[in-house]
Length: 320
Length: 320
Picture 1 (cartoon, rainbow over the protein chains, first blue to last red):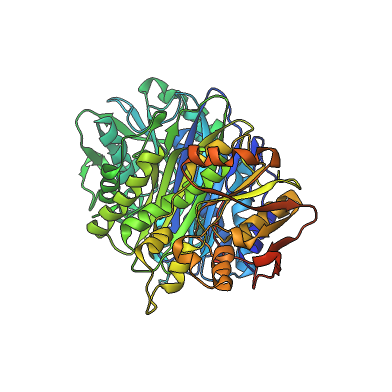
Picture 2 (tube, chains in turn orange, brown; picture 1 turned 30 degrees about the vertical axis):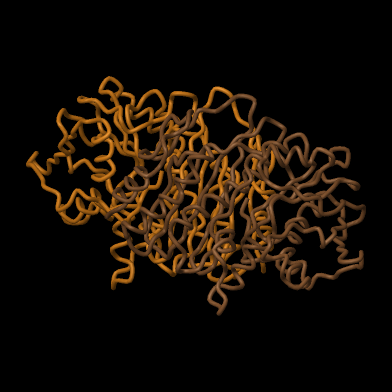
């Protein structure tokens, strides 16, 4: 199977293109019609075998995750997904691998409203780069620099399951399917991102760990935060762990792909309705403070010191 | 040096952003203002070490070429470059390597009018993916499907030097600097692409070899072509080779990154003026024919049969 066979196989697996695709796969470049009153939002992330996923990962999960991490970046900007480009480096051309990869990619692309419009396939160590393009109403992108003292700090879903799964891979106690799915098949919070336009003062997706990613908001906004570690939303598996272990996984483990955002306190009462509309749990975990420190309290309100606030640096987690 | 150090170093080396960049490097995604009356053009290409360039290639040349091959795709669409995203997988973080790479990238980005707006850095085998975004006046993109019988077939620059350099790497007769530069530092024909809007009936850039790339135009347009092999534009080095060797390099060697386009015969007289305006030689090498065959004639008008019309398939040459 040569390059063109590969491309045909990928294309055949994809859902029908969305509106606005003037020229798709099969020319020197793709051409798109542009909506009015919108800005273009673009992000890209590379996943390399052995770095971002174990060598034995299900190719359907690689297909899903390579798109999901980019959709998560669009979600964190409040953008609507539109177009994707896929760069696939493969050591060999195994049709079964490719079909499974394409199925995983397509199963997320369809409901997310994103169309594969082009890309590149080449020989090399297994590596997947997806570039996602989306649109946001002009001036409404969710950035990192708008958090203000008094804002509430909110996270979606639960934290730490992906890190728990990663810590157990290859161990005597391999991760349960639910944790492994959180690692391999993260859910981009697209609907939440859309609904945060005009509401959140800052937003980021949690790819490198809550402490590190919230840290980016704090640095960009020139503020600090006080978080209540006991309120970090946890799955049953996480909640059963000793507090220190649980906190380490939840605060510094990467790959959650939940959203962390700041919300003016005046809107705090709307959280439940927002969660219902967005279809994901939302948890108020603390408050933005003056200064520049990220402080934690634990059981009984006692101060807690994290082992590290560095998060996971596989130089690089979240690409722009 | 961690991911953020890498990104800061790349950013510092780049020219100032062009207009319309609402949010650049440093958030979850880049945000762009959109022009009216234009379509978005997007392409992406991956270059892997040992596949697309020799392991010992000057990092400045890798920086140049990774951008150039994408700008060449924009040129082939008649698009104006605007934004680039860069995914860089590196086995280690050597500041000298990175600085040289960034300098090579920046030296082409500046005069080409393209701004590095985001990307991703990660650990892995050396691999460079660039995604280029540009704009074209709505409806004026140069596609592959408009060639008609009677159109002239035209190529820019000279052909075969990159393939000659590649064939001589590691040999007892290493390539001369001029050939090596054609391999390592191709020149995207952006001004020519712009001037072909509304004039060329089809256009492609020659990344996989003239026969293969013109073949894409013929297939998309459902036409054939008759080319005069003696008219293929050649550098002095190529012109001195035996005819069969020269033809093989010129017709099936990849990496030229010249444009091949078709032009209604009524415009053939404008070629000299077009070449002067675009700043690159243009050579009429044959004619589009009915049918679907690519036929060649050689010295004295005798039919010539190419050893292969397949071109170079490193599954993948030209990404979309």
